[in-house]
Length: 150
Picture 1 (cartoon, rainbow, N blue to C red):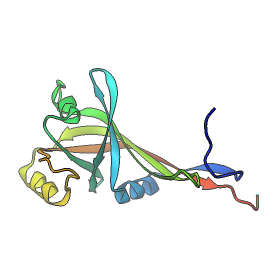
Picture 2: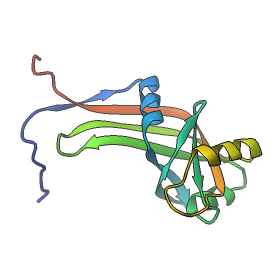
Picture 3: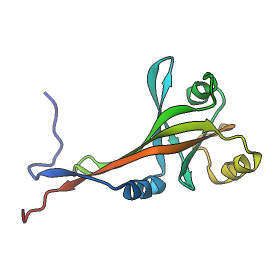
Picture 4: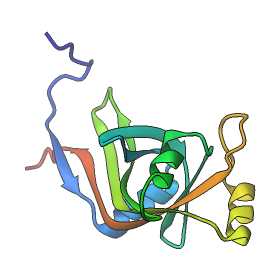
């Protein structure tokens, strides 16, 4: 038996977000989850990010699976998904955004220096790899209460 939360009744509806609405929510989110492939299997890691001119930028350590997945490829890019959300489990309301695109290591020293100043890791370890994700598809949904007038 699956336990239910304290919310009783009340219909909820999914509302599709426009790409610009979804991107605005992604920009505001303090962290997200990068989805990538490791040894032909999907992997997910929680990371903080910033959005710079439409590109999602994350920092990680060289020895992490995210960095290794990019470096093990024959090319310098891979397809990833990046997901952010803000869901209130008690109220069963909130939103979720997924950006799917191409991830590449950022190698420009001036950009790396700027991101090291503005994108601080949450742990006391040097995050020596900067990865940019150029979204190709951005989708999102909002979970809203049903309109009682309908």
